[in-house]
Length: 156
Image (cartoon, rainbow, N blue to C red; front, side):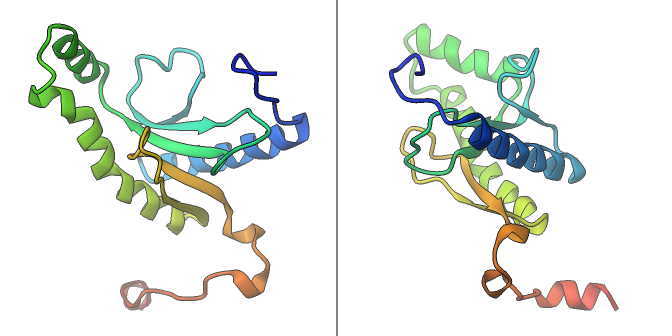
C-alpha cells in the first residue's frame, strides 16, 4: 500500500514502467535535453525534463509521464511571490507557461524516437506529457507508416 492507501503495482509491472522511463530519458538526452527520473539523487535542484513513474497498481491514465522543470531560481521566485501575497505577478505563471511551451517539443522528440506520447488532459498537471509505450511494442498492423515529406526530402 502507498502512503495514500493505494495498492502498489507488482515488481514485474514496475520493472516494465521503469524500463519505459529509461527509454524516455535516453531519447530526450539524445536530443540534447537535460532529462532525469523524478526521485533520483539530487534532482530537487535540477532543471529539464523530469520523468515520473506511477507506482500505484491502478492508474487513471499513463503510468509514465514527463514534465518540464524550470531552473530552481525561477521556481523559488514563483513561490516567493505567492507567499508574499502577489499571486498575479508574471513570475508565478512562468514555470507553467514554459512547461506548456515545452510540451509539444517533448512530444515531437519522443514520437521521433519511437515513443508513444501525447498531451495530458489532467487539470492538475496540464503541461505533462503522457507516455504509453514504444512503437516497437505495437503489432506491425498498428504501427505508423507515414513518413513526413520533409524527412524524405532530407534523406536524398
